[in-house]
Length: 370
Image (cartoon, helix red, strand yellow):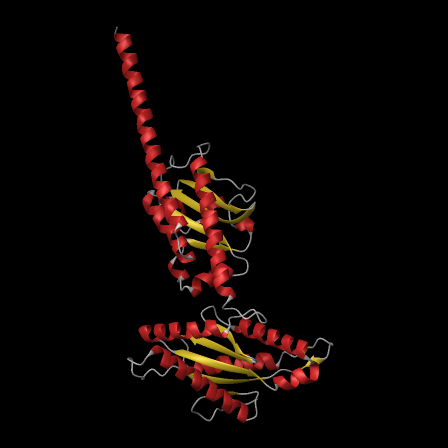
């Protein structure tokens, strides 16, 4: 009789444990489904990234969540910066240039759970390594190709145990991968209309959008903002003498040289024809003049070989203008943008009138020589 009661109590305890575990699993499934719906409804790349880094961590009581994305061509970072999305404020968003660096074991395309190992996992987290005891590494895969990895960390050594079921995690990572691919495709479509087809840099439409954003930001933070207008000297003569194919090559080469000299915060665009425009964020007039002169010298020192293998010397004229800090803060931002562009264009005209291959600042005599 006593043995029967003992066995009955043991069975009841096991049943309660099974029921509790089933309820926990049901609760986890409901939270995952709610997260999946939010991810599927993300309207932008930045919104999706923030959901993964912060909403997931909060909803599931994790100690660390990091998102590693493969971005060898700096494409994803450029999309986020254009939203704008301040990358420095999100240290758990990590970019890698190759698949081997994206996960601790790039040979596996399935979730991996187990103890934290600093030698394998340190580069995947920005948290103090000794604080983590177990991790779940969730590769993000599309069409058999690794595109990133979502990494979960816990101080509880029992949270992620090797051999545990990963069905729910595999489903979640599949949805995340689809959402990531979809938002990236949306960004690519948006940027298709904002990119110059010939030079592969931003076009005038993009520049016109960004100049208002940058003026608003400069005014809000009381920062300097400079604008450069750059014109390829005697471009019509190049087309007439060497042909339009060589002329196109000159445009592409000049755009590439300018792009190489830009900081991440700067904005370069083909403004039209043989003209380029640059916004130099948080840059005063003196620094802008130095940058303009460096650009002029770089292009001057880099002759181009035309399509017929002939050498084509290239020079540029550059006009520099800056946002006027003492202007009425109530002035319309679009009017201020038009005024900044007009001032830079006027400085460019002065550089060309003075003989080309030189830099001029609006409103001064321009002391820069060839």
